[in-house]
Length: 195
Image (cartoon, rainbow, N blue to C red; front, side):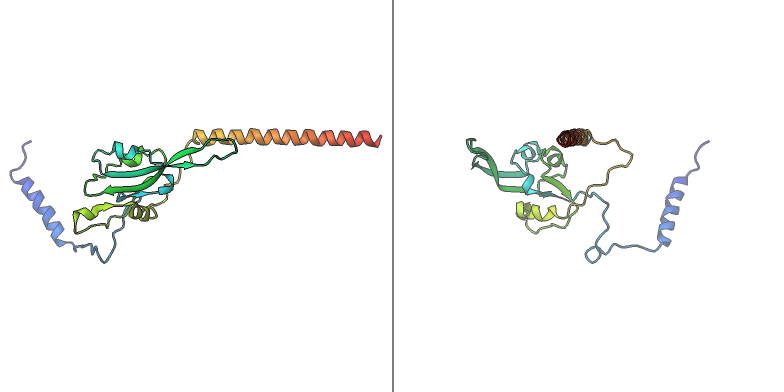
């Protein structure tokens, strides 16, 4: 069956007329903050304590918008006779948001969970050079990162947690068995002393 000429135009005008009769809803943005969905990607927050200056985020960034500077520091031996260790200390961590394309590769590749998505989105500047945010600003955004979603109650327990729980149960069972054996030995010794 051939379509009726002009039916597409009629459908389009019907949608337009329906929309014209509805009350308009305007988001009064600066005065009323929008309700963002959970886990919104806004800016990247830095949890400085977890950063080991491994440089993976900077190397994997396709835009090369992450700038990291560090120096080595010698840590004294933990035990007498041990050797001194050296570790990297973070001097500068900056992200140039004028270059960033918000792909999230830096967050995914970080092995120590030092980078997170923050829902903050109000960081516009009048000068493009001010869009390079240093670690202090990235740290401020870290505190706006929402809690991760709860695990599914029907999900399988993570292997690491299951292994740790089994090891703890074995250690507790061994300690209980040893305590019972010691109590039985003490009771037997007390019995011998009474005879």
